[in-house]
Length: 165
Image (tube, rainbow, N blue to C red; front, top):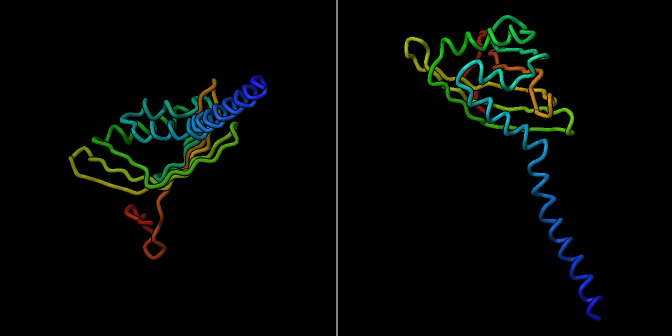
């Protein structure tokens, strides 16, 4: 009788432990890793910090400013340097962030709000739509394609940097 009472009790404890451990493990899985990377990226204060988010051997960036496309590490870094060399006190935050992954590939869609000061100290701000495509490089998630955009007012053809939800 004691063995019978002990055995279900042990399996019950193991089942409870697994039920508690599995969600904790899932919470630290690929989706959480991508979210953590996205949060590190939005806090970047220079081109090197931003470049750490990208796959150095395979990166394409569609920035909201011309040209149409930046391909490769050198082109992307040059674009980021142009921004960070002309901006200070850069602060970014997520208005929304949604991540989907199958564990091999991931997509992060977000709405991001940034404020910064230009070289003359003028305060600037913008709301951006960002889609990042990610894969693992050396066991770590890296962005291999990033698309940044802002809505355009069709009547004027001008970017709407302060668009709201």
